[in-house]
Amino acid sequence: MKSKAIAVPYYVWMVIFTIVPLFLVGIFAFTDRETGAFTVSNLMEISKYLPTLLRSVTYAVVTTVVCLLLGFPAAYIISRLPEEKQSTVLMLLMLPMWINFILRTYAWMNILDANGFINQILMFFGLKPLKMLNTSAAVILGMIYNNLPFMILPLYSIMTKIDKSVIEAAQDLGCSDSNVVRKVIIPLAIPGISTGITMVFVPSVSTFIISRMLSGSTIGLIGDLIEQEFLGLNYDPYVGSALSLVLMVIVLVIIGIFNQFGGEDAVV
Image (cartoon, rainbow, N blue to C red; front, side, top):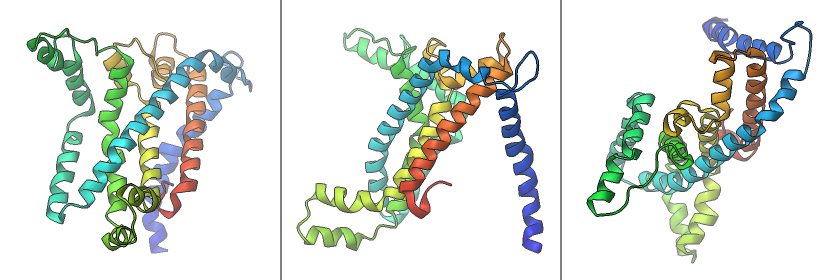
Protein backbone atom coordinates (compact mmCIF):
# COMPACT_ATOMS: atom_id res chain seq x y z
CA MET A 1 0.00 0.00 0.00
CA LYS A 2 2.81 2.38 0.87
CA SER A 3 4.50 1.85 -2.49
CA LYS A 4 1.23 2.52 -4.29
CA ALA A 5 0.72 5.73 -2.31
CA ILE A 6 4.19 6.92 -3.29
CA ALA A 7 3.31 6.36 -6.96
CA VAL A 8 0.12 8.48 -6.79
CA PRO A 9 1.84 11.80 -7.71
CA TYR A 10 3.38 10.10 -10.74
CA TYR A 11 0.00 8.79 -11.90
CA VAL A 12 -1.63 12.20 -11.38
CA TRP A 13 1.16 13.90 -13.34
CA MET A 14 0.92 11.33 -16.14
CA VAL A 15 -2.86 11.72 -16.44
CA ILE A 16 -2.85 15.53 -16.42
CA PHE A 17 0.16 16.17 -18.65
CA THR A 18 0.24 13.07 -20.89
CA ILE A 19 -3.05 11.23 -21.19
CA VAL A 20 -5.38 14.25 -21.16
CA PRO A 21 -3.40 16.19 -23.82
CA LEU A 22 -3.25 13.09 -26.04
CA PHE A 23 -6.97 12.58 -25.57
CA LEU A 24 -7.66 16.20 -26.57
CA VAL A 25 -5.45 15.88 -29.64
CA GLY A 26 -7.44 12.82 -30.70
CA ILE A 27 -10.75 14.63 -30.18
CA PHE A 28 -9.72 17.71 -32.17
CA ALA A 29 -8.25 15.57 -34.97
CA PHE A 30 -11.63 13.92 -35.59
CA THR A 31 -13.88 16.95 -34.97
CA ASP A 32 -15.40 19.15 -37.67
CA ARG A 33 -14.44 22.78 -37.09
CA GLU A 34 -17.87 24.05 -38.16
CA THR A 35 -20.37 21.58 -36.72
CA GLY A 36 -18.37 19.81 -34.02
CA ALA A 37 -19.40 16.46 -35.49
CA PHE A 38 -17.13 13.47 -36.06
CA THR A 39 -15.13 13.73 -39.29
CA VAL A 40 -11.99 12.45 -40.99
CA SER A 41 -11.68 15.53 -43.20
CA ASN A 42 -8.89 16.90 -41.01
CA LEU A 43 -6.83 13.81 -41.72
CA MET A 44 -7.65 14.09 -45.42
CA GLU A 45 -6.23 17.62 -45.48
CA ILE A 46 -2.87 16.26 -44.43
CA SER A 47 -2.34 14.91 -47.96
CA LYS A 48 -1.22 18.36 -49.11
CA TYR A 49 1.49 18.29 -46.45
CA LEU A 50 2.94 14.93 -47.52
CA PRO A 51 6.06 16.50 -49.14
CA THR A 52 6.85 18.27 -45.87
CA LEU A 53 6.22 15.09 -43.88
CA LEU A 54 8.47 13.12 -46.24
CA ARG A 55 11.17 15.79 -45.93
CA SER A 56 10.97 15.64 -42.12
CA VAL A 57 11.31 11.85 -42.09
CA THR A 58 14.18 12.00 -44.62
CA TYR A 59 16.11 14.58 -42.60
CA ALA A 60 15.52 12.58 -39.42
CA VAL A 61 16.75 9.36 -41.07
CA VAL A 62 19.88 11.07 -42.43
CA THR A 63 20.55 12.62 -39.02
CA THR A 64 20.09 9.27 -37.27
CA VAL A 65 22.37 7.40 -39.69
CA VAL A 66 25.15 10.00 -39.42
CA CYS A 67 24.84 10.09 -35.63
CA LEU A 68 25.11 6.30 -35.57
CA LEU A 69 28.19 6.29 -37.83
CA LEU A 70 29.86 8.95 -35.68
CA GLY A 71 28.56 7.80 -32.31
CA PHE A 72 29.38 4.09 -32.57
CA PRO A 73 33.17 4.42 -32.85
CA ALA A 74 33.17 7.35 -30.40
CA ALA A 75 31.28 5.32 -27.80
CA TYR A 76 33.57 2.32 -28.29
CA ILE A 77 36.72 4.43 -27.92
CA ILE A 78 35.38 6.10 -24.76
CA SER A 79 34.37 2.74 -23.26
CA ARG A 80 37.93 1.42 -23.69
CA LEU A 81 39.62 4.37 -21.99
CA PRO A 82 40.76 4.13 -18.36
CA GLU A 83 37.83 4.80 -16.02
CA GLU A 84 39.14 8.15 -14.81
CA LYS A 85 39.48 9.36 -18.40
CA GLN A 86 36.02 8.09 -19.33
CA SER A 87 34.36 10.41 -16.83
CA THR A 88 36.36 13.37 -18.15
CA VAL A 89 35.47 12.67 -21.78
CA LEU A 90 31.80 12.17 -20.89
CA MET A 91 31.79 15.48 -19.04
CA LEU A 92 33.25 17.22 -22.10
CA LEU A 93 30.62 15.50 -24.25
CA MET A 94 27.80 16.70 -22.00
CA LEU A 95 29.23 20.20 -21.44
CA PRO A 96 27.61 21.81 -24.53
CA MET A 97 24.23 20.44 -23.43
CA TRP A 98 24.41 22.59 -20.31
CA ILE A 99 24.08 25.61 -22.61
CA ASN A 100 20.62 26.63 -23.76
CA PHE A 101 19.51 24.80 -26.91
CA ILE A 102 18.67 28.05 -28.75
CA LEU A 103 22.02 29.61 -27.87
CA ARG A 104 23.84 26.59 -29.30
CA THR A 105 21.86 26.93 -32.51
CA TYR A 106 22.61 30.66 -32.66
CA ALA A 107 26.29 29.77 -32.43
CA TRP A 108 25.95 27.61 -35.54
CA MET A 109 24.22 30.48 -37.32
CA ASN A 110 27.30 32.61 -36.71
CA ILE A 111 29.67 29.82 -37.72
CA LEU A 112 27.83 29.08 -41.00
CA ASP A 113 27.05 32.70 -41.90
CA ALA A 114 28.47 34.25 -45.09
CA ASN A 115 30.87 36.21 -42.87
CA GLY A 116 31.15 33.48 -40.28
CA PHE A 117 34.12 31.62 -38.88
CA ILE A 118 34.38 28.99 -41.64
CA ASN A 119 34.13 31.47 -44.50
CA GLN A 120 36.61 33.79 -42.80
CA ILE A 121 39.14 30.95 -42.85
CA LEU A 122 38.39 30.16 -46.49
CA MET A 123 38.79 33.80 -47.53
CA PHE A 124 42.03 34.04 -45.53
CA PHE A 125 43.48 31.35 -47.80
CA GLY A 126 42.10 33.05 -50.92
CA LEU A 127 39.17 30.69 -51.42
CA LYS A 128 35.62 31.68 -52.26
CA PRO A 129 33.14 31.73 -49.36
CA LEU A 130 30.51 29.00 -49.31
CA LYS A 131 26.78 29.36 -48.89
CA MET A 132 26.12 27.17 -45.88
CA LEU A 133 23.43 28.96 -43.90
CA ASN A 134 19.79 28.68 -45.04
CA THR A 135 20.40 25.30 -46.67
CA SER A 136 19.26 21.74 -46.06
CA ALA A 137 22.81 20.80 -45.08
CA ALA A 138 22.79 23.46 -42.35
CA VAL A 139 19.55 22.08 -40.91
CA ILE A 140 20.85 18.51 -40.90
CA LEU A 141 24.16 19.65 -39.39
CA GLY A 142 22.31 21.41 -36.57
CA MET A 143 20.22 18.31 -35.93
CA ILE A 144 23.33 16.10 -35.85
CA TYR A 145 25.15 18.43 -33.47
CA ASN A 146 22.27 18.67 -31.03
CA ASN A 147 21.38 14.97 -31.07
CA LEU A 148 24.76 13.23 -31.29
CA PRO A 149 25.16 12.91 -27.49
CA PHE A 150 21.84 11.02 -27.38
CA MET A 151 23.40 8.41 -29.65
CA ILE A 152 26.75 8.18 -27.90
CA LEU A 153 25.49 7.83 -24.33
CA PRO A 154 23.29 4.70 -24.74
CA LEU A 155 25.96 3.09 -26.92
CA TYR A 156 28.60 3.87 -24.31
CA SER A 157 26.48 2.41 -21.50
CA ILE A 158 26.14 -0.86 -23.43
CA MET A 159 29.76 -1.06 -24.59
CA THR A 160 31.10 -0.66 -21.07
CA LYS A 161 29.32 -3.95 -20.29
CA ILE A 162 31.14 -5.83 -23.07
CA ASP A 163 33.83 -7.91 -21.41
CA LYS A 164 37.27 -7.27 -22.90
CA SER A 165 38.00 -11.00 -22.67
CA VAL A 166 35.26 -11.66 -25.24
CA ILE A 167 36.99 -9.39 -27.76
CA GLU A 168 40.38 -10.89 -26.92
CA ALA A 169 38.98 -14.42 -27.37
CA ALA A 170 37.65 -13.50 -30.82
CA GLN A 171 41.03 -12.08 -31.78
CA ASP A 172 42.84 -15.19 -30.47
CA LEU A 173 40.55 -17.34 -32.62
CA GLY A 174 41.70 -15.50 -35.73
CA CYS A 175 39.06 -12.80 -36.18
CA SER A 176 40.29 -9.71 -37.93
CA ASP A 177 39.46 -6.31 -36.47
CA SER A 178 36.61 -5.86 -38.94
CA ASN A 179 35.15 -9.27 -38.07
CA VAL A 180 35.42 -8.51 -34.34
CA VAL A 181 33.35 -5.37 -34.90
CA ARG A 182 30.86 -7.09 -37.21
CA LYS A 183 30.42 -10.40 -35.38
CA VAL A 184 31.06 -9.49 -31.75
CA ILE A 185 30.73 -5.82 -30.89
CA ILE A 186 27.75 -4.90 -33.09
CA PRO A 187 25.55 -7.87 -32.01
CA LEU A 188 26.29 -7.17 -28.35
CA ALA A 189 25.61 -3.45 -28.83
CA ILE A 190 22.21 -3.92 -30.50
CA PRO A 191 20.22 -2.70 -27.44
CA GLY A 192 22.29 0.50 -27.33
CA ILE A 193 21.95 0.98 -31.08
CA SER A 194 18.18 0.60 -30.86
CA THR A 195 17.91 3.04 -27.96
CA GLY A 196 20.23 5.56 -29.62
CA ILE A 197 18.34 5.44 -32.90
CA THR A 198 15.06 6.05 -31.10
CA MET A 199 16.45 8.89 -28.99
CA VAL A 200 17.84 10.64 -32.08
CA PHE A 201 15.05 9.97 -34.55
CA VAL A 202 12.16 11.11 -32.35
CA PRO A 203 13.40 14.67 -31.64
CA SER A 204 14.80 14.98 -35.17
CA VAL A 205 11.53 14.20 -36.93
CA SER A 206 9.58 16.65 -34.77
CA THR A 207 12.06 19.54 -34.54
CA PHE A 208 11.11 23.05 -35.63
CA ILE A 209 13.51 25.50 -33.96
CA ILE A 210 16.57 24.16 -35.80
CA SER A 211 14.91 24.26 -39.19
CA ARG A 212 13.60 27.78 -38.60
CA MET A 213 16.91 29.21 -37.41
CA LEU A 214 19.34 27.46 -39.75
CA SER A 215 17.19 27.62 -42.88
CA GLY A 216 15.86 31.15 -42.40
CA SER A 217 12.33 29.65 -42.39
CA THR A 218 12.82 28.62 -46.03
CA ILE A 219 12.74 24.88 -45.28
CA GLY A 220 9.63 23.80 -43.44
CA LEU A 221 9.40 20.57 -41.47
CA ILE A 222 6.39 18.89 -39.92
CA GLY A 223 7.15 20.51 -36.56
CA ASP A 224 6.98 23.95 -38.21
CA LEU A 225 3.57 23.13 -39.72
CA ILE A 226 2.17 21.97 -36.40
CA GLU A 227 3.40 25.13 -34.70
CA GLN A 228 1.85 27.30 -37.44
CA GLU A 229 -1.50 25.56 -37.12
CA PHE A 230 -1.61 26.24 -33.38
CA LEU A 231 0.18 29.60 -33.15
CA GLY A 232 0.18 31.06 -36.67
CA LEU A 233 -2.16 33.51 -38.33
CA ASN A 234 -4.18 30.68 -39.89
CA TYR A 235 -5.12 29.24 -36.49
CA ASP A 236 -6.56 25.77 -37.01
CA PRO A 237 -6.12 23.41 -34.03
CA TYR A 238 -8.16 20.73 -35.82
CA VAL A 239 -5.70 20.26 -38.68
CA GLY A 240 -2.83 20.84 -36.25
CA SER A 241 -4.14 18.03 -34.07
CA ALA A 242 -4.47 15.77 -37.10
CA LEU A 243 -0.84 16.49 -38.06
CA SER A 244 0.24 15.83 -34.47
CA LEU A 245 -1.68 12.56 -34.43
CA VAL A 246 -0.05 11.36 -37.65
CA LEU A 247 3.38 12.33 -36.31
CA MET A 248 2.71 10.45 -33.07
CA VAL A 249 1.71 7.35 -35.03
CA ILE A 250 4.91 7.54 -37.09
CA VAL A 251 7.02 7.91 -33.94
CA LEU A 252 5.23 5.05 -32.16
CA VAL A 253 5.68 2.77 -35.17
CA ILE A 254 9.40 3.58 -35.29
CA ILE A 255 9.78 3.00 -31.55
CA GLY A 256 7.83 -0.27 -31.83
CA ILE A 257 10.07 -1.50 -34.64
CA PHE A 258 13.30 -0.75 -32.81
CA ASN A 259 12.00 -2.16 -29.53
CA GLN A 260 11.73 -5.50 -31.33
CA PHE A 261 15.49 -5.42 -31.93
CA GLY A 262 16.53 -3.84 -28.67
CA GLY A 263 15.79 -6.66 -26.25
CA GLU A 264 15.44 -5.88 -22.57
CA ASP A 265 17.39 -2.60 -22.76
CA ALA A 266 15.27 -1.09 -25.51
CA VAL A 267 13.31 2.07 -25.01
CA VAL A 268 9.79 1.48 -23.68
